[in-house]
Length: 108
Image 1: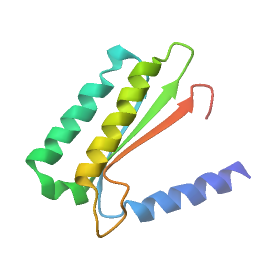
Image 2: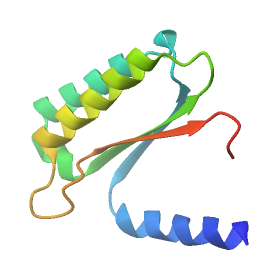
Image 3: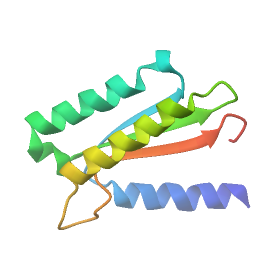
Image 4: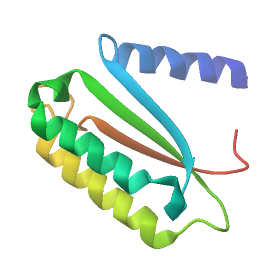
């Protein structure tokens, strides 16, 4: 049942991010959405306040469509790797404070 799957995933996320400040963004992968600027601003926040790397998480959901820009998506993935490699919690989960989730626009 889809509802049980959603509830299970929600429970996992609540456990994973317990005690953290979670920023959630949902956007299309288009240049005018400002995703690169958002990621760079998040990186600057972590550069200026490195102690926040263990306390904040940015989850960006990107809706892909036929108009999505593949070069932009590649750049976003590069930024995720760079930011997470600099600010990952070595002691805890090595994934880092930035999550990029892509999905087709028609998915729910």
